[in-house]
Length: 609
Image (cartoon, rainbow, N blue to C red; front, side):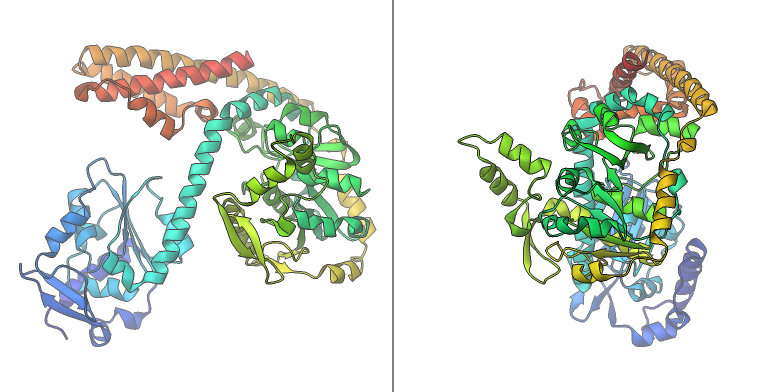
């Protein structure tokens, strides 16, 4: 055994590791220090300052001169305010161990694709300061998708510590991990941008539609009520190949249509069984504006544009709200039927099919790209509007080219093996389907694509459309479908008198909670100003501020108010303009937060009183 390897130290570290992470299982033979030493690729040496260093082949994991100073350099951006530090591997562990010693309150996440390297380091350095840290996560040989999620356990903005030497030893793994993390960051940016742009619209829609809770039933009665196949119709250009056969499709499946495709379906002479519209924007309402579909059931949510609820259809069903106001009421009244959000109405359609119990879900027209160099199916509201608003200098064709060849454009592969022009923004939806479809397979739920021109998604197999049309009708199909559809339209499922009374009571409680939150914001502003004047020397003022913060956190309505409260990004931008007063900055910042909370509660109270 290499004389640097310390058997006693190894077993102490290993014992701490096992106690700290009993759920992590490692093959017992790899836990034997003699086996580790005999099979190790490491060459361990003493550095110039007397500490241990090592090299893997010809590559040194640490400085040959001063590994500890090197670790300090890696940690130069970590300070007492850092909430979370993520290490992409760690060599022998100098940097994370030092981080745990200097910053015991920080969350530490160690991503290590090579568990053998982790065990080897236990025989070389004392890991006790790190392994005793209650906010430590170690992810040995963890898939990149899972590791990426772990990176954000303690903070939405962790500090990443990377070392090219360590990354190069597992370059493929860390390249994949970087891509997943970047995708998440882009998604978070999109969510923040969307919240900043539409939060007031969402809040306004929610309050204008609150009475719909007393009128509409939810989708709960449909949960796991049918195993019939579902066909989801999206509004991609390839849907045009399917439209002529909609009647045949409806005679052997349940059709769920995204609202953007409804116009094209009606022109083809077929009403879908369900149409889904969950986006709150007016532009999305325009897809069904002036349309009639008396045989379709509309699925929507309480934040939809209010005119949606005047759509001429057989029935309107609500899903569980995705927004704080609706969630507040449903937390007390009970959910209308929650569907996971995937950022697109097609993901909601797929979730609905799964929710109802279908084991075969077929998708048509979900192209996530531009087959035939078109953005949407001909005759859709998108295309009609493009023509209606075209001018001599900004034609419909010019608009299409702008969409097709944006800075985010990319080349992907369709189900024919051909290249399809796509858009990086569509990667989010492709990734969502990839994750969820593969997970659903574990429950024997299979998803197929009926349009070969669509972008290929791992986990969604292509099903030859002609073969689908020639499939025999499912056994007892007519009877099963009629039974299922009758549940969806059963008036007995609508809110009864007890529910309506509960709603009225909840509404009053909400107003009271929002008024209390408003009063706390006013008190907070006054006390913050007092603390600034007193230069923070009056302990009683600080105790009162702490009490206000505690009461705000306990408020039932705080999450609803957050809908029109500034995002973290907006709040930090406002904070940049606060007085440059280091001693009282925290009180200036508190005053800012209370002031924004006051604005938010006043907006709500103005709408609901």
